[in-house]
Picture (cartoon, helix red, strand yellow):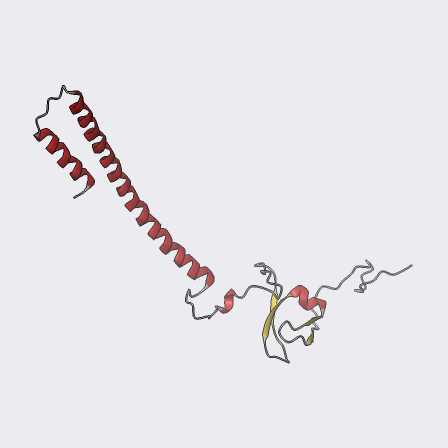
Length: 159
């Protein structure tokens, strides 16, 4: 039996007593029954709204799950990772969409690491996995012209 049905039952019991409506006690009893009736209607409306919100929340949860799967990968807990989701350099910073990066395999430990073009252009770094020095010789790197003479050196000339 719902709350509304229980209030209707109580109202029927009170009317069945055939009490004198002009008595103060009967007026109080009728006011309480009217209040219970309004409260039952409000509770019914809240329950209905809660069911609607719950259904909408379930839909949002499903959409979020789909979005997480799309963004973060397969969504399983097996430990696998999507190859294309590996968009971080050795410092944990994310690469921008327009930033070029390279996958390098360390000749010592055979681990693959992803490096930004800036790191490659520095020409040298230690492998983050085994610590062995790695050297890079890339012709595409922009020449450092800190002296301003156009020679590509990294020190200033005294004229």
